[in-house]
Length: 437
Image (cartoon, rainbow, N blue to C red):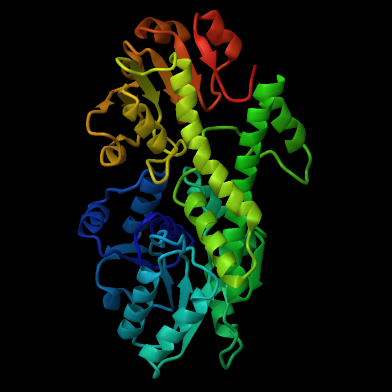
């Protein structure tokens, strides 16, 4: 497994749990040092236990020597980052192509090379070209196996997936038979529980990942727009979401209103899909609109908070509950909190924040004078407004009376709808949430 980041580490540990011998290659010295010392550099529930048990069993190892890791490998997975390329929205494939060349140079025998990273259509063909050009003396099978892991639920998603998508290059002499056989062997435990494994071509597999994330991002954006409409006409977005979610054609997931989607996938992948589509001459107008609406929403949420504070934040203290883009992760990538807090700081607010997992990552991304607190009540201490940005369960359990006692003001901007409006107003709060009376 080339890359010990989120995708590589979770996938490698789960494959080891399936019984495969997995060597994870990581070039970042700090990350590698943490992994070899038994420390997990990301927060993902259950991952520390899974990694430790498979390291102890001898099925999972870490190192920075690609040649050693590949010495008796049947398959090599590329799980490196594909960040947004500056200026045009395309995915930056520098790391993917560099990994392909390094794999080819280090290979000692014929191999299956699988792209696990999220990559644009055509990447698999280019990986195949690089492999064969670099080592014409060997035969490389190439496949695309995009991940569909939700942060905070990644292990369950890998072990009991909705589906596994595998695109296989069938242009070789055996028509991809060897590649398919190896993939089926790796995923045999999933075949035993009848998890759907969709075998297709490289291009379809690559596009499927982008299409899935873009569809979910549109679903989030749709319910956010419906929440805004509810506020104008007196509707309740939770009842709307339940009413449409019970339709089996729609489904109930990803229908929770909030300050806008973020994270490592939706923002990057929607931008990349629009760039791919524009280059192909088939623009994805719905996705383009989704990207624009989502970005505008974050700014709009900051203005909502400023309005609730009376139109000015000069001399006011804002308590922030939650920083990460979702609960059960420490991931701050593209979190809605970043533009919101930047705008509140610009408007003159003193910011005091608490997040159970995300504060270390947030320090490099937020203004320097932000106060980092030990718990939620400390973040609310003497605050004029308390803002909920991430729906951690511990925030749901806060006692309203203690929260009210800690605050100087009484304004609550609940951008995740974690509390009952009636209960919070009975406790003396000027309570406002998203899409509810």
